[in-house]
Length: 326
Image (cartoon, rainbow, N blue to C red):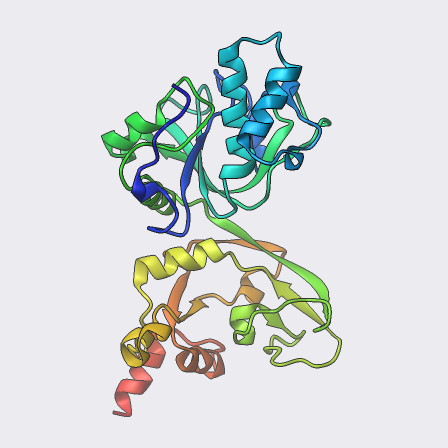
C-alpha cells in the first residue's frame, strides 16, 4: 500500500511545484526539531546508504536494500526503498511540504507548510531520526485543521506512510492557499556586504527592489566599482503573496503590463514597501506582512514614490498628484 497513484493535477506541468506530506515520526517526535532547524526529516537512520547518488534508479537502490538488510521484513525493505528514494529523488526544490503537527501545539494546530529550498542529504551528526533531511523555508507554522477542505484533510491524514503526495485533486494549489492565508510574518535582515559585480549576483531591478542602498539611503544603480552597501534581504514568498492578494496592476496609475504588452509582460510589476526597508530594519530586522506592508506599483510610479520629498510619499498622495494634473 506504499505506492500511491499520482493525479495529473499533482504532477509538474499543471503548476511549477508539487506538494508532499513528510511526517516527523509516528507520534510527531521530530516536529519541534524540524520547525526549529528549518528542515524535514524522515527517520530510517539505520538504512543510510553510503551515497544515494551511486544508485542508478529506485530498483538499484532496492537491490542494495535487499542485499544488506535481509534481517528486515520484505515489507520494511520495500517501504524503505520507496520512501527514502522518494525523499531524496522525487521531491524537488520549490515543492511544498506539509508537516503534520502531531502532539505539538494546541489541539487546533494541524500542519505546518513549507517550501523545499535544498537537496536531501545524510548528516550522521544530527539527532536520532533526523539524519536524512532537507532544508525547508517554513511559510506557515500552524495551519488549523478547520481551514482545510475535508478532501484535503483526509488525504493528508494517512498514518501508514512517512513521505507521500496528498491524493486530493488540486492538492498543491489548496496547500499553497492555506500557506498564504496563514503566512508567518517573515523577518527582513539587514547586513553589510561589499558589492562587487564580479562576485555577487544582484537582481536587475531598481535599487529599492533589489534592496541595495548606499549609506545615505540612495539606490545603487549599475555599480561598476567595488563599494560598501547595506543589503536588505527580500522574501520572494512575501512578494508572491502581495501580488496574489492585490494583482499585478499598478496601484497608482493602473497599468497592467500583460494588457499593455502581451504575454511577455504578464506578471511584471514592482512591489513597494510602504515603510522603506532601510528605515524599518534600522535596528536589525523587521517582520513583513505581505498583505498590509506591500503594494504593487509600476517602475515609474515606484521611482516617483521615492523621489517625492517625503521619501517616500504614500500611494494615495501620488494618486492625488496625478489626478490633480489630469
